Amino acid sequence: MRIAGWVHHRRLLKSVAFLIVRDAAGLAQVVVTDPAVRAELEKLTEETVVEVVGTATSNGTAPAGVELTDPTVRPLGPPATPPPFDLYRPALTASLPTQLDNAPTALRHPTRSAALRISAAAVAGFRAALDAQDFVEIHTPKVVSSSTESGANVFALDWFGRPAYLAQSPQFYKQLMVGVFERVYEVGPVFRAEPHDTVRHLAQYTSLDAELGFVADHRDVMRVLRDTVAGMLDAVNGRAGSALATLGVTPPQVPVEIPAVHFSEALTIAGAPADEPDLAPAHERALGEWALREHLSDFLFVTGYPMAKRPFYTHPDPARPAYSNGFDLLFRGLELVTGGQRLHRHADYLAALAARGEPVEPYAGYLDAFRHGMPPHGGFAIGLERFVARLVGAANVREVTAFPRDLHRLTP
Image (cartoon, rainbow, N blue to C red; front, side, top):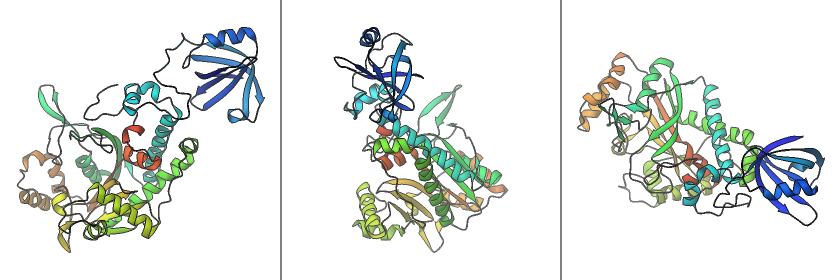
């Protein structure tokens, strides 16, 4: 039997030596009794890349119940310089900044790589759930000409001598593509030049976006979102079971119907003032506790956010125009998803921009499509890193991000 991987750990006992080799599938134990092989093993440092050929022997105490005996061990490169922390220990005890500074090796630790496997499975589930509902995957520009998409700060860059910006989201483009395919989704990076320095914000993160046409209102969007999140968790269970076991995580069940409360009711539940224009993190935590206590649900929809706190393209509630047909989905007391119904008539867009005192010109290319017929539509965006962090119980989204970009970090 042949295996190849990294020297995870060595245990050099008096009469026998054990070599633990790590590859993408996990750990394998190699038993060394030959003095010559042992002498070569003693020269190897942890993280050296090796090839081992030996006899597979059953052993219930070894990883996967099998070990290699009578081995030959061949280095596939020079002895590695050990990283500044022990990767063979069950927990990675280095501080998070140290881990991030040394991400290429820190990510080799089973707990760090497990989170990334879960992330990959969640994205596969997102795609599969929407493919099953006749959505079409699209790919939109990440460099745009306007910085006025949502009022948030943007990263400016030089585009062949012209000003350009990194896209804050695919929002405008996915709406336009509803006019082509009716149902679309995208998985891609988004960029927010907001000076947040918190455990829940990144300057670049992965957004899972979807948009669908011919909706009655935002509730149609919420139903699709519910099924999508359920599909993501099903995929995590099915594709990343060993990663879940490594982290000791059991994914929650998504209720057949996720409980929903109107924004005005949410303020009362959270103990916030009735004139509060938005939900603070403490309010979201209180709502998460309420949903779990009252509905046994890790998920909660908050609907009807004030129009003043939603982007100009948000459709107002026809019965209560000060409130929107928009929503957030909270996952264990943290905002995970923002979504809602959009405006779809050209005249309504002109009126919405005028009401906010915004010029039409920066949006001209976007607005033009609505002159040519767009159906009632809506959509949502899921923050992948927040989803995974909340699922595995990570205190900081950087713990589940391979190479995070934030206010302070641009390397590695």
